[in-house]
Length: 235
Image (tube, rainbow, N blue to C red; front, side, top):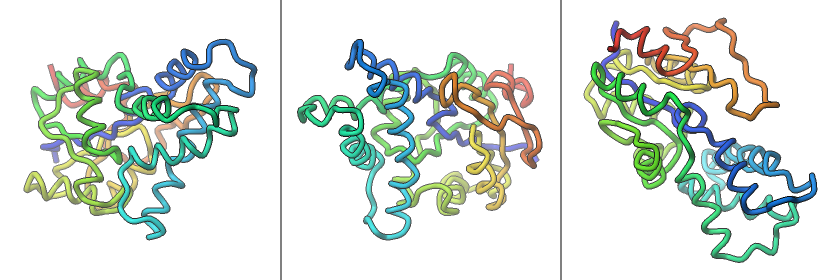
């Protein structure tokens, strides 16, 4: 079955969180000793993402937006990098780096191609204001911005994937999740949705490792979003 809606993961799939944060931290730190590496800082901040969301999933925290979770993680890692003296305005501005992450080079043009044939939406754990800012910053074209915030559940909760189908009044199999993360896609497939895997080998930086194998059950495997647009017959 051809999908009618493409729902996009955002962090890592559409935007380069590692490179964006590394560049901002380099500008903030300047020439610093290795224990204050901008690359290590980016990885440490992202490493807190899943544990923070798990605190919400487990009920330890009530519903908490990703902006607020990012700030909690930030405050927790600053001492590891000798940055505990950063003042409040600097911390607030640094936390907003997630609102201005740079898209991958193919993202904006490929979304325009895909939108000629399909309805497009986000399906991200990022909160609505964050996603709106990313779309504006990167000139990213969507028909609708959907977020875990809408469903008050973080992926991989089935409420998120099934929620997309409900919003568009579609069957789950008419929705295709597009993501660079196989666990996200597997959860969507378990809900009856289709899946398209995007490789994004540089997501975790030049020294990072990702499983780019084609040994998976998803309907599509693409090198990038233009490759996916070709596979889906978009001009």
